[in-house]
Length: 114
Length: 114
Image (cartoon, one colour):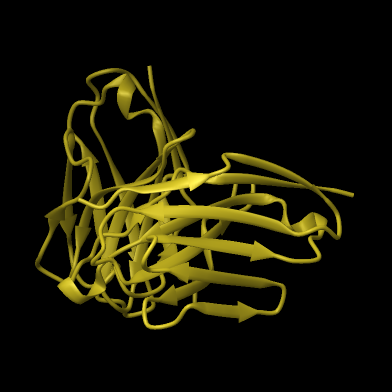
């Protein structure tokens, strides 16, 4: 099955700096890569996703890049703000196989220091 | 529009006791899921229901059973709770197959097994 590795497990940045979280996946057939944000004590919520037919996607201060050859994808947050502090999870799946299973990484705890 | 609602939010059990976690969604989604979240382990899929009347095992199904009662409701049962089942449980639903569309999570149920 799919295996998703996520790094780093913790990340501290100064407010206004950029943050980058990286994930690798094992199944070359995977084609859907979402990112979820979970604030302390809250439910995970989708913040951005990318499909394998594109290499990059942006939404305001967040962007995701995908390198299919290397089987890795990354989340980039620019101009970080204290409200970006949360745990971020990457995930991967092969939606073409009618898969109902997302495989999640173990998460990155991002702390933005004011 | 409440989204995904799960009960109870907190529960303490003794080893060997049984309990059922209830989940309901009002978004007319076909697919529903139960995940568990443990520190440093990310989100792991226990069971899912691709559509009303079907259920399938996920990554960590041992010790659990599920029932898709109707399109709205999907319950998770622990027949004989064990300390290893101490975790936060999240129910989720999606309009598309979970491997290709946004998951909407409930608020979570924190279960402690003594």
